[in-house]
Length: 243
Ligand SMILES: NC(=O)c1ccc[n+]([C@@H]2O[C@H](COP(=O)([O-])OP(=O)(O)OC[C@H]3O[C@@H](n4cnc5c(N)ncnc54)[C@H](OP(=O)(O)O)[C@@H]3O)[C@@H](O)[C@H]2O)c1
Image 1 (cartoon, helix red, strand yellow):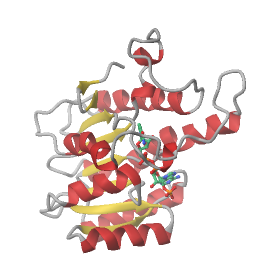
Image 2 (image 1 turned 60 degrees about the horizontal axis):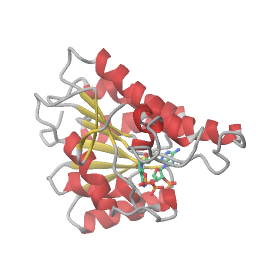
Image 3 (image 1 turned 45 degrees about the horizontal axis):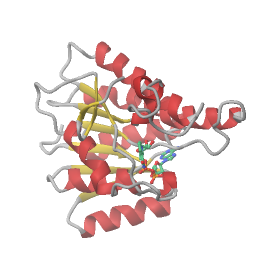
Image 4 (image 1 turned 30 degrees about the vertical axis):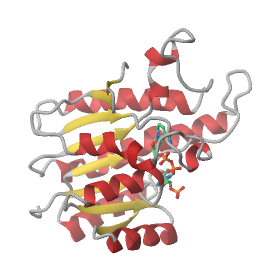
C-alpha cells in the first residue's frame, strides 16, 4: 500500500463526482477518476491535474464486469491499492417513472447503475480496501430514497417526484449500504450513504439549487471520517437522514 491515501471516485468526470475528486485531491490524496468515456475522463483528469490534483484516469463502466475487474487491477498496479471508494456514478434511468405510467426499462436502467453497479464495484475493490489502514466506502444515495421521506405526509419532509425507478433504486442502495456495513462491522472499513441535496447537474437538467461543490461536501466528510467514525449511516449536510 502506498503511503498516500488513494481514492477512487466513480462517475468523476462531471457534476458532484468531479467535485468530490477535486476536494479529495486538495487534501493531497491520489485520486482515481472513474469514468466510462475516454474523452470526458481525460479532460477531467487534465483539468484536475492543472489544478494541482494528483489525478489519474480509471476507465470504468459500472455496468460492465470486465471494465470493473480491469479498474481494480489498474488501481493495484498503478496506485498500489485503494483506501477510499466513493460510489458516486448514478443515473435517473430516463423518463416515465410515474407509478401507473412507468416504463420497466427505466426501472432496470436505474437499478443497473445505482444498485448493481455499486455492488459490482464494491465487490471488485473490497480485497484492496481490506489491506488499507483506514478504508472508507461512501455510497452516493439521495434523500428521495428515504422511505421515511417517501411516506411522509405532504408538507412534512416528503421529497422528490413520484417515481418507481430512481427513488426506489436509492432505497435499495441504502439497504445495500446497511448490509455491507453489517458484514464489515468487525473490520476497520466504514461504510456510509450520503445525500448531496438538490444539486444543479446534468442529472436534473441543472434545476438543482446547490452547487456541485456543495453537493460534494458530505461525501468528502464521509470519505475522511476518523477511525472511530460512524458506519452504516445515512447523512446529509444537516446531519442524519432517516432511512
Ligand atoms: N444532482 C442531484 O440533485 C442529486 C441529488 C441526490 C443524489 N444525487 C446523486 O449524486 C450522484 C452524482 O450525480 P450528479 O448529480 O453529479 O449527476 P451527473 O452530473 O449526471 O453525473 C453522473 C455521473 O455518473 C456517471 N455514470 C453514469 N452511468 C455510468 C456508468 N454506467 N458507469 C460509470 N459512470 C457512469 C456519469 O458519466 P457520463 O458523463 O459518462 O454519463 C457522470 O460522471 C448520483 O449517484 C446521483 O444519483 C444527485
